[in-house]
Image 1 (spheres, one colour):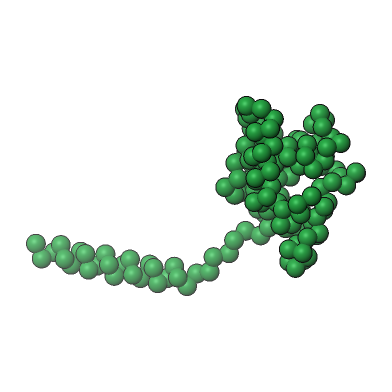
Image 2 (cartoon, one colour):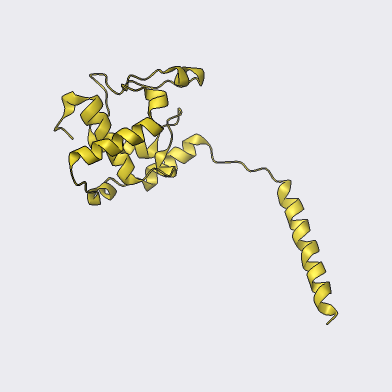
Amino acid sequence: MTRMPNLRVAASVVLAALATTACHQEFEPPDRAARVANAEVRYSATAYDTITWGDESARLTAGNTAYAERCRRCHGTLGRGQTDYARERGLDTPSLVEAEWPLARLDSLRHKIFVGHESGMPIFGDSDLTLRDMDAVAAYILLTLRPEVLGSS
């Protein structure tokens, strides 16, 4: 029975040594370009095909909430971009409501929301934002902030 405490002591010494060694290694997260590339590989446009909404107003309400929580700081309440928050952080945030905005399609916008951008847009595919939330935000941007695109997705 005296061997059991010796095993516990030995195990404790080994675990302490491993913990000490591990503490001296620095964590190096993947660079932003690698994270965006990884999100690009994981993105699937067909993943949105199973999302259903009771009605469009429920979708837009959910989109408004998610936009306010995740997008407004950089893109502004009206989607014009270049907010004080973004400028203070050196972020070049585009206007979401410019006439020639290249992402003014539902599939393009969902893709960008999921994948993010190397220059600073969050990679929401790596966050707790669900595909349903991403769909709602995309719809909110297109149908509420950009009413001229109603019906074109």
